[in-house]
Amino acid sequence: MTDKIIRATAAQEHIRAFAVDSTEMVAKARELHRTFPVVTAALGRLLSAGAMMGSMMKGDDDLITLTMKGDGPIGSLTVTADSHGNVKGFPGNPSVDIPTRGENKLDVGGAVGQGTLTVSMDLGLKEPYNGQVELQTGEIGDDLAYYFTVSEQTPSAVALGVMVGKDSSVLHAGGFIIQLMPDAPEEVIAALESKLSELEPVTTLMERGLGPAEILELVLGDLDLVITEEKPVRFHCNCSRERILSALATLSNADLESIIADDEEIEVKCHFCNSAYKFGSDEIREILTSRQA
Image (cartoon, rainbow, N blue to C red; front, side, top):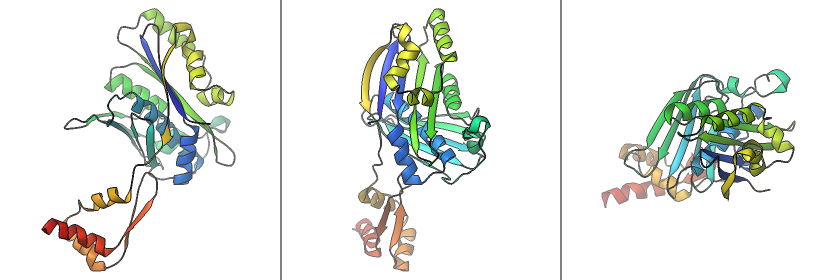
């Protein structure tokens, strides 16, 4: 099984759509961060959304970062994605255990709480674009739909889901984003709303064996669906020893001298993948020496 994103249009390009199977990506995130089930669901939903929003960007070096900060026990969720299908993310608190809601559903909204969603797009300009909205439900799909409507003036349907097994493994994860273009005719809007109102949850469709293309066909097949692209997506962190050393080089002389004075090996962990990098005082001393050269 390989995770993938589908891009498509429908209704003579009055609709654009994205769908993703992110099961392996979310399973990798669960493994790296050792998340409890409700955190797996929350982070998995945001990873799926990040993957699709990353595929909306055109530049090779474009990056998008989604940050949810709430007053619930998770605290925050951060996801970064590029236009090539590389996605990474981490939770503020991976070990959240709260009661389920009706029908044994994981209470993602309760774990996230009230707060803000911030979308930051680095498009290679002097300053990144930042948009921020208040969280509507904390369920993530609703919050992103609200963001698209308010910040980008693009009415959107966002469906995200993560099915977690009794052993806490990720059985299915994915979602879709369907957006109306500004000149969409009323009959197209009505037809789309009708389809969406009767649609089963994404993970239910995936459990029945439907992939991203089949899910879009189910929703948009009567509106002349045209699939324009299919590409792989993965959880991928680009951290490295060199990148971490470069980050250490941004510290002040006083901070670096303090590390050297301790004369102990320091360990720096990457938030996104939990990889640990160790540096000796000699390496820190080299940074200071290079500044004085």
